[in-house]
Amino acid sequence: MKEEDIEIEKVILGAMLIDNIGRIEALDIIPNSQCFLLPENKIIFSAIQKMSSNGSKVDLLTLAQYLKSIGKYQESGGGKYLANLSSKISSAAHVDLHARILLEKHIRIQLQQMLNHSLVKCTLEEENIFELSEFIQKGVTDIFSSNMNSAEPTMAQRIQIELENRLKAQTKGIAGVSTGSRQLDRFTGGFVNSDLWIIGGRPGSGKTSWLVSEVLHLANNGTSVGVISLEMSGEQITQRMISNLSGVDAIKLRNPETLTPEDLQRLPFFEHKISQLPIVISSPASIRSQSIRTKAHIWKKKFGIQILFIDFLQKISGTQVNTKFGSRDQEMGEVSATLKTIAKELDIPVVCLASLNRDVEKRSDKIPQLSDLRESGNIESDADLVLFFMRPEYYGLTGTFLVGSEQYPVDELAVGSLAKNRHGSVGEMPFRFHKTIMRFSDYDNNENFGF
Image 1 (cartoon, one colour):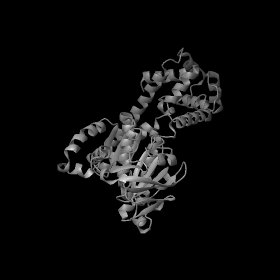
Image 2 (cartoon, rainbow, N blue to C red; image 1 turned 180 degrees about the vertical axis):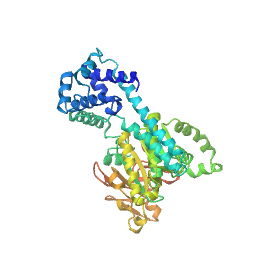
Image 3 (cartoon, one colour; image 1 turned 45 degrees about the horizontal axis):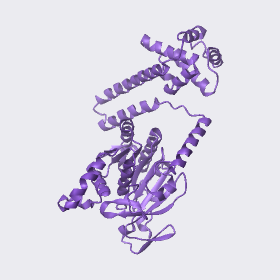
Image 4 (cartoon, rainbow, N blue to C red; image 1 turned 60 degrees about the vertical axis):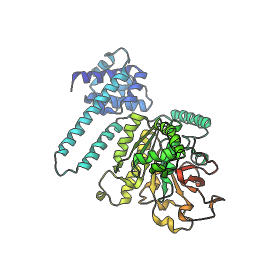
């Protein structure tokens, strides 16, 4: 315990006692009393934090009275120690800088302790190296998450936030970032921060194509997008983006010798356009939920991502190895809970694709239901919105297909079924799926989402 560290603690507490603004700044940065090393200072900070949350006036006299009322007056150093704190400084200038220094030192100590423990575990042959990797990643993320100040806003502040959000929604027409689909926006209000979306469908339903269409729309409109793909490689997703945006058939890009001179002349413009978009893609062979959480935090800080897409849910492993879970359903429940945590921690929408079981194919209309989610666990309860896709053509259906109250030709038809919407109504809507370029659009609009 260095003398200069103790002096910083005393300066911070002194500033909190003599200046209201200084106290607010310090409380906004320092999450709890564990950041202090000296026991007396821990007690004093906890007392000031509690008094502030109760709306009590904080100064030397009121603090002393409060400490006496909870039986902590002598443990905090008594009157002489308290008086010395308030007399050490003449102003609260730079208290925010001192508070950040204190927080950084506390985090550094926690990291050292966790990494020292990990180093010991690393030397033990019986330790599973992959579980150890997850332990380290989780430890780092938890340390930073627990030290982010979680002071709750007052109801007056919440009302102000609500008014500001309402004004933004009135200006934009929706609460969140537009999905690019007018009909989907009407149901959902767009992609709203902290929401978890689950996009379900059987193979061939167009889930990944919808994801690519959305990523292009969002990035083209200035939204920074993160994509974690366990289904396709980053190169395959990029290839789909090029086809989607350029209009060159996807099969031609997979077989370059079939590209026409017109295609070759057209492609460079759109390839350059995509290269400038704010998109970051990771395509690991496998990943655990905690690794996604860590990656999302890094991407938020490094690239400023505003939305995260994941393809797909059932390929994500839980924090523990499978055998330690009671069932795969429970493991998927842990995964979906982590995805919802990421959405709330980073205050961004998280959109995750999910596969369905075969029960949907036993029904005549082939429209998915919530019970069709494979290994559903708590997925349904964790999700804020669940959107299913089905393509009648995929099942060999011909003629027309009923969507809502209208019949639509099955050619290029994709049925979107919003089965859960925590914020509004549910229902079905028609989309157009352009098979050759893997592009989604509203049925009455041949343009890609928002382009």
